[in-house]
Length: 338
Ligand SMILES: [Zn+2]
Image (cartoon, rainbow, N blue to C red; front, side):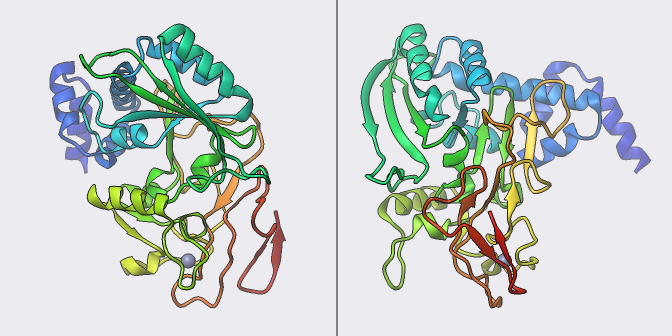
């Protein structure tokens, strides 16, 4: 133990070039563990993540700082492939096709204006995807408007970046993340932070499929086409996607463990991993919402194997669940109203 501590302490003083080469060879979980060993490691590693984050943004925009400033002011977040590329430590300049930004409904327009006025993006299409009841479309029940923009070539010559800007159905930019088809993409980049809602699964290259929003109403239920594409995409990347934790043969306390789809989770709880790229420690209150309410969520779906309990309730306390029940039934027969 003393030897390890001596080694970690010595490593703190390595010149940048050598330090960065070592960090480049580590996977995300190892880097995070190292960053927790001392303030010096944390500052250096978070600085490296910030550098990677800006490099990734420069494939899409000229001025990452302005975009991040706008995100800070509006609580907007970057979702989908970009946070996953940082987690997977993919170092290509643009390892995915489009940058996906989520905004609270009232900040959709200002974000589009920023991209068009300051970054020369052209609006290709804008779709209102809510149905007559105000629910989002089948790709994501919490998305109300999708704007697709096309920009001039950036750090990759000859290629034009695509940015998609999703408006939440509510004043909460992270709401669409909670309605993702799989936990693999339940991550986001804030202006200065990276948040993972299911790090225990994602870092093990595992993911749960959201039974409520990725399945149709047939008997037996099947994946809806949009979810089928997502599931196939992440399975091709090596993720083991399942419907319930039992399939991995790992024990979990139903309704208690962070990996159980029936556990009422809150954004920022002990099952959440949030890294702040600035000087702050791991957990930060920057969760990408313009409100201060605690955001409570769970996947819901069919009962976990061996448990005589089921609920159909992906919900978010922030807004309640428009489609599902507003109460959760617990195994002991009690109910909680949300
Ligand atoms: Zn369970």
